[in-house]
Image 1 (spheres, one colour):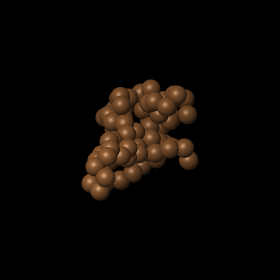
Image 2 (cartoon, helix red, strand yellow):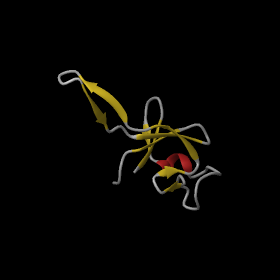
Image 3 (cartoon, one colour):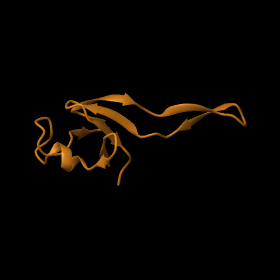
Length: 79
């Protein structure tokens, strides 16, 4: 599931992408094989150190992208 992030809201891609020239024929982001075709990746999973055991733990953060129009797009899993 993809969502659009703003400073104050989480929006559906249908609300934002329906008028975008980079969107697909359904007015949705071009999501193909686990990447955004109309934007660039910003970050992936984060590595953090667990203070109790001092070992690295992989925190599963959403994949973040910057679309061609400047919006932040997050992939939050299938849903």
